[in-house]
Length: 286
Image 1 (spheres, helix red, strand yellow):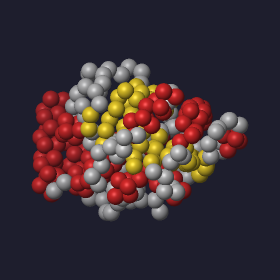
Image 2 (cartoon, helix red, strand yellow):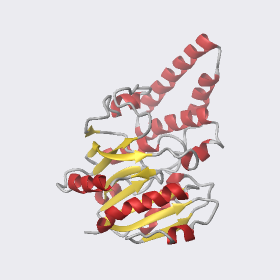
Image 3 (spheres, helix red, strand yellow):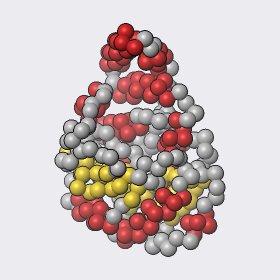
């Protein structure tokens, strides 16, 4: 019965985290353990001990300089062969009905990876614009319909242990502020996973104003970092010819921006991002 292993990275969000942990009481009959990896400045041990939780949890400290994927990899050291791994962000709210739907959806044993639907303030289901080739091939134009999906949200997904192991049993820590969802989904797909997005299972994403990858972005040149990770993703999963094609398309788009506005930033970031994107190996938890 208790066959779910839950992972929650957190960073300076004790209020958000506490609410999520209390929500999980409704899922307690299925929880084997919850691993919380904390990068907060303050020590929140006493705060968590005051919560009335009906399941076991482990609190692990992680250095603030590390990525959220490093935190997820640290949590995996506590895995005990549970059938399902459930990855969550700390600023989610999950109603009890959603947990019931999760169990019922997984019961037929057909789905290997389940992505619940996310709702947030200002969300427009019918108003999604594709910006990259990845968006075009992986995201539904209508987010209100269940379907197969390539992109898998690292901060909200349930994955069967066999396919997670086949996909490498890790999160690539090279991905800092962008791309980890694409890489994770691609590796699961290559492992033969049946990945399913079910919008009827609604989870609320509160988009906490600070913490998480947002803090990481404050220390980086975001435009350049995204271009680097974009090309790194293509180098990792596609042929050299496809990578070159993406470079040429990026240069053309950057040149158009120069002609329209006089700004060379996009063009410079595309070229430099390509040059520095040949990252060595799959950086994992050390």
